[in-house]
Length: 248
Ligand code: SAM
Image (cartoon, rainbow, N blue to C red; front, top):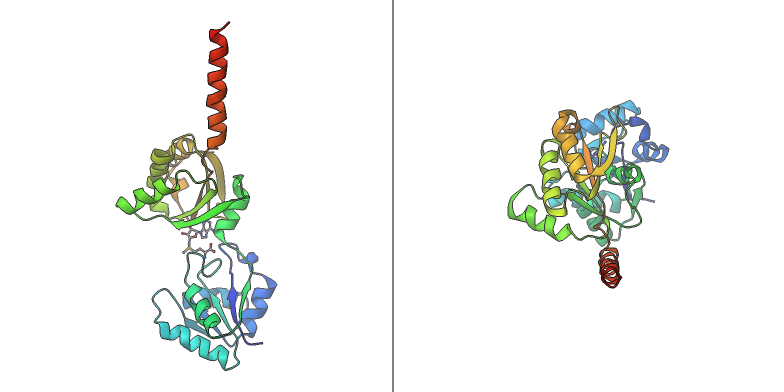
């Protein structure tokens, strides 16, 4: 059946491409790629000869329409991004909507996603989490976003650029407090993979002292805000104990 396949590709270790991804990428009539040069390398490594066309953030809406027209005409096409899962901090969700709105089939393939890989190795609570993508770079928007997130009761997942990681850790520490637990997951699936869970103040110190910790690709995870309920019970208990002590 003709469809748009959303195909996740490796985030570092090429061994993470799935058998199904290889099969689909070999069989579709064309691959819409964020960066045809980069995807070209992946394809040639797998011996895949399917032709590519560019689909990226700045693609005109007509490109999505052209891809939809192909599927409507009976062809299958695949969407891939530079790395990981398309649509996750990557282009693609508009294309999915165009297909759906035209009654065309969309088939997403599971595969690598840095956010989920980082979460699974972080040791932070994973029963509830929120993907925050990239924080606003600076200024008022950044401050407002951080404040809005300060009391989140889910683990938060951020993507961050290496040259901004220290500033981001410091801003998080300023807003959430140095004792809030966090995890830095760097170069996932690659040779210098590093995952460290510690307090924000310890992570700040670590990155400040070792510039290597601010290199490569980074997922930053933040533990939920300490339970208000527990804090309240704690202070109520404290009051009770103080009261008892006064009467002894
Ligand atoms: N669609 C991708 C995915 O599914 O993970 C994410 C694309 S986003 C433009 C790129 C960001 O993802 C990087 O700046 C980094 O924060 C994170 N990232 C990608 N690969 C990574 C890796 N191997 N280790 C850690 N973070 C990674």
